[in-house]
Amino acid sequence: MADLEGMKVAKDYHVDVPFANDKGFYVKGANALDWGMKKRLAHIFNPKSGNTVMFAFDHGYFMGSTAGLERLDLILPKLVPHVDVLMGTRGAIRSCVDPGLASNKAIALRATSGSSMLQDDLSHEVLAVDAKDAVRMNADCLAIQTFIGAEGQLSSLDNLSKAINLGQQYSIPIMGVVAVGKEMERTPRFFKLATRILAELGANVIKTYYCDDFEEIVAACPVPIVVAGGKKLPEKEALLLAYNAIRGGARGVDMGRNIFQSQNPVEMSLAINKIVHEGYTDQDAYDFFRSEIGKR
Image (cartoon, rainbow, N blue to C red; front, top):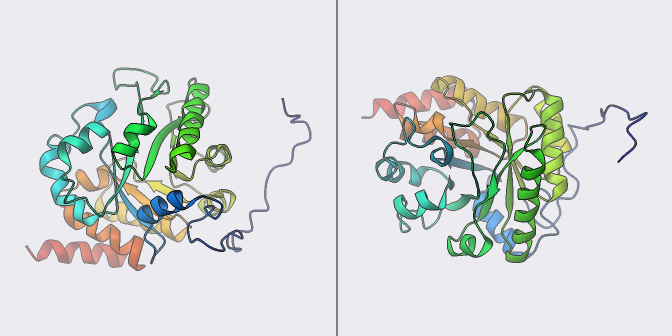
């Protein structure tokens, strides 16, 4: 075990200094990856803006039917054209996403499973998708739920490590998804710890939550961070979250409930795109959102 005595609190994040190992490829931390990895990352992160809008609709793998996703076959065709990445399970993608409509969309394939809303502890999952099926799904990355500080931390990190090993064999990037359980603190200290652990183990993208001192979390993480939308917020607040995330250095947002539970999901996805790819402020995006609704 590492000797923790005398360890100093980290403080030199140099948030005003850009990531140094950025020569040759525009995705953070990806210079040493092979061509196939870079090709998939370029499908996820827009080469012009360097950012991404992910749409998460994988909630059913542990929640079953959830509000806004009762009919995947009806909601997905409306939203697919307006996002960059579809984050879902292989069952939902195969059954409800038209391959033609999604031909230019990246796939973030949910690859862990084993929990349900009936359990008190969701941290015990298994790696549920093998690499060959990920290749058949033409996945651009595998999303691995990871619980740091929870009872199931060891199995979570084992799932992540196994997925990274498989990803290296088949040139599939891995997105480590920082899960926040009931007993875990939602603090900058926790997110600095969790995001860095996942990146050190080899995850190529980290999905986490926005919090105070977010710029330090981004600076300390050597791969791109995508911010989760989390719980449903009023549209104006969700757009502020997206704006703060991008301004703080995130390379994208992964909105689920803040799109599919909005009364105007298409207009909401368009407004988020304006922030992520075109540099809109949250107020500009909200004004755009309202103007798009007014066009009906």
